[in-house]
Length: 430
Ligand code: EPZ
Image (cartoon, rainbow, N blue to C red):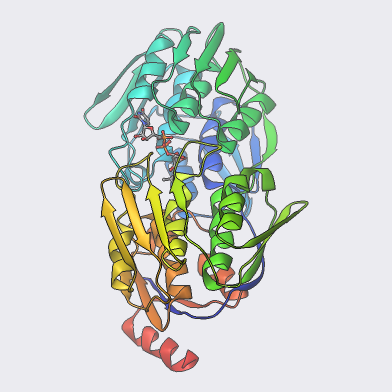
């Protein structure tokens, strides 16, 4: 079983290249099947969730070619099955984008209910509501989302909650419905905009993505395109936080600084220097951080996907910090692991109260999910002594070469496969 072994206590310093956004790429890869012509997608992150989705697509007859690690050519002219259900697809969240894509193109689909990180109950009622509003019969049947329509017809849809997944999914189906659909209370995340731009580059007619009202005029047919995925805002934020928590100096490259504003603002507030230049953001920390209050909110608020990385940083910030998690109810599991590392904190419902300590100590810990796992790696890099982190398959779902990128910043981290290798690492770094 792969693990990370880490010796902490060294500031991370240097530059790191940020990959394409996993959560944008998942939707874009799925949406690429909406045309029979070939679609080329660049800046694709080479992470497990993307590879699982591509594998599931080949199983229904989609032709997938990887000219190199960060690009893919997709041709969906030979789709042979509208049922997507295998062992792996259930483990990822992004699988639900195949529902919107296949429903839009073929008016019929069944996809195994999505899994993904266990960070809350994660219902799909808003997806179903949107598909029904477009005239489809949509339900959950024997563990699958099932949707079928004679014809998709435009509608005026008001989302009850701000949801990234349902906004993108319904936008995809509506892009091939007849007439003009309006989605109100839409999610505004950068990846919603990226998917809309991608669909438009295939011939869709979508306006307003990035605001809370999206207007979609349906078209009958899409064509092939070449498209480059936006940089991953959460991967960038994670490395920015790595600079903060280790008292380091890290520049993230190939980013869109505007997408990082809520993170930059909080880092400045707790005592870091943040410099933006072109497609780079540099974070400098002298390790003297002060606590703050954070509430996770839909974009442009502070992202729930950065909450654990911030929580770890605040565990070492002077004074009392309060974090309110308002998106997913089960995103504080990493706090138990932080306690084992010597943090001083308490969780009550969706609120965590943290009193910063001077030092964390290395420990044997588990990654409870993707972002929390990455956050605990940061904690271990800041802590005194050795840590061993298990269940890193969660981290590999969404971070490309995480440990290698940390190594280039001077992080003492290695991917190991046995206790013998843990011992060897300890001997090597002393
Ligand atoms: C996406 O999940 C991301 N996943 C998550 O990233 C991210 O945390 C989340 O958006 C919020 O930004 C992917 O893009 C694959 P939502 P998603 O629909 O689409 C409620 C990561 O670490 N809701 O925006 O599942 C829901 O319970 C992952 O990369 C409904 O009530 O999130 C939540 O409270 C983790 N009914 C809120 O909306 C629905 O039908 C936001 O969820 C759908 C959602």
